[in-house]
Length: 499
Figure 1 (tube, rainbow, N blue to C red):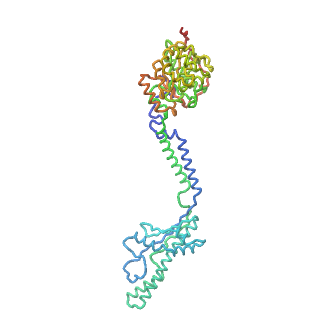
Figure 2: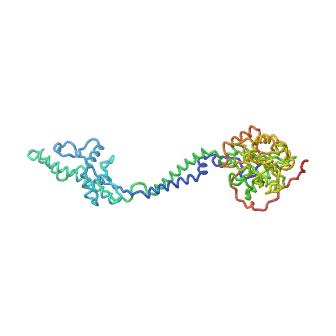
Figure 3: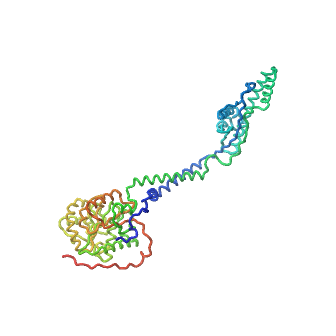
């Protein structure tokens, strides 16, 4: 039974079990933060180049003239209709003129032209009211207010001038008429000649704006950060869906549900080495104790170590476990059976031995080819994978492995066999029936998900239940006991070598 605190079964609260979105963001937080930072930087750059634009608005009140007064037909007044929206649109058209723009430009001065006024001033009816808004924009707040007010006054004055002129013309037409009706008409025309257009008047002057148009800079930066976070989250989810690597320990156990015997900090991915970190040594010592607790056999036990994909830490596991077993007083032989990518012998300091394959396939025994490891003299190594091209001899060597492993059992307490990744090639399949224990090595963030499925299927079809997982690359918990003096492990009674 595993005693490593990292060896619990997956629960619904495990990372990514219930919250795949949060799990994807957490695993690729760098992407989310980077995109948010880029978005804020771009927004800040745009803000630094943006010219502040101020908007000021004056209001003109529109009061349509009553209909039915035929005597004032000669004056072009805004007449009341049943459609208020249409009345406002008509008033807007009457107030918009090139003359009003020219008059406003002269009133504002500062070199302002009529063309600039026409470009920067817009009249817009305010729906649901009797107001025509005169909006002006400028890079200076005072200029914006002056433009809006000057245009509003000029437009109303222009309309009044037109009405006065039309009223004067109409008065001359009725000058010789007699009667009450003619007198009433003359009085009405005289009033228009005096006051101008009674249907439009400036109701509110434009105040000087206090802030430029558009959202404030802090709001723009906050929105940019939010957009960056959203894009980063989407990117993280898309990368997660396209990522073939196993996310966490729970996913390893979900595909091959066997105990986790040890969680090892271990070296970086792809590095096969002896780890001197106290937490790593303690993890392998814990693994060694668990293997000892499985009971003593009549002869040496064969431990086959494999993984789903390359770079999971398989060879490092063999090296460090061998050192832990030797440190506990066991006789240990390691067999480098990864003919496609041999690393174990070199990691132990052994020189190439191209003659070993030929010797073994030619009938030589383990005792004839095994060598002491320079880094740990009690450890014996069978460098099966000694030269490039030895993989071609794999079928012949596989047929001999039963006899070779049986011989090794008699020479050691533990025989560790480093094999090629079972999820990528089937080299380890013929050895499964000859192994007493099968250790699987997985590394979250590195193990290929498809290779893991392949390995799980091969183990199931071979009728093999692995002893347990060694999970590499986990975060080591801090403990003051790692630096304490170790209690010597129980030494096993050495058996004499078989004749």
